[in-house]
Length: 218
Image (cartoon, rainbow, N blue to C red; front, side):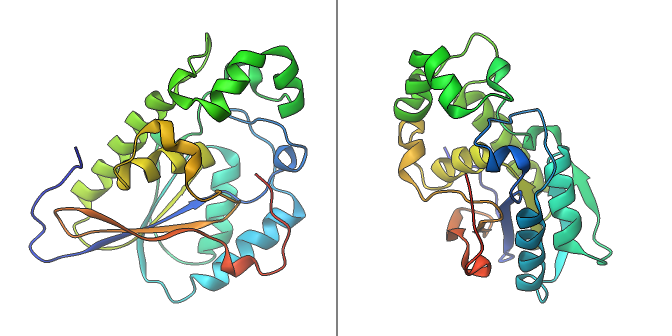
């Protein structure tokens, strides 16, 4: 069921972005709760997003505490005096011993879970780490928290690919089995959702028009 409450005609708008490209993204390595620094391409991506958002009057930002999201948020916001709240629930999916390994290495060493991860999300149940349901549960709780504390305004949310995917199926009232059917979530992609106190509306999904010819990676 979608979270809702009466908002008195006020509208809250969330600008949900994935962090910019990192070194491990470029190497096709799974990151999860581990980190790697932004590449030069990633820094350019974030700078282009800074330009895109120049006229958006953000009143607050919520950010995963991972270094890659912090650095992205810092570049995007620039010199603005916007309060930033770091929330553990916005972290990427915990991937256990997959973290730091390439997708090709995982496909060879953990074939069944690798298949479930990409082709049967409901069946993905790692021995160490989180399921997609685990991620969605904490991500939705964060969105509910934001809606309870901000009845209106423009809020920046800086998080991760799998978090955004689980939120998209929630907002679009899909099931987790449809996790991979939505748009690809590129680095610094923009998803805009509005909340009028009763329902969420996806206005823009995984948009990367600000990147133009920049290279992007999963």
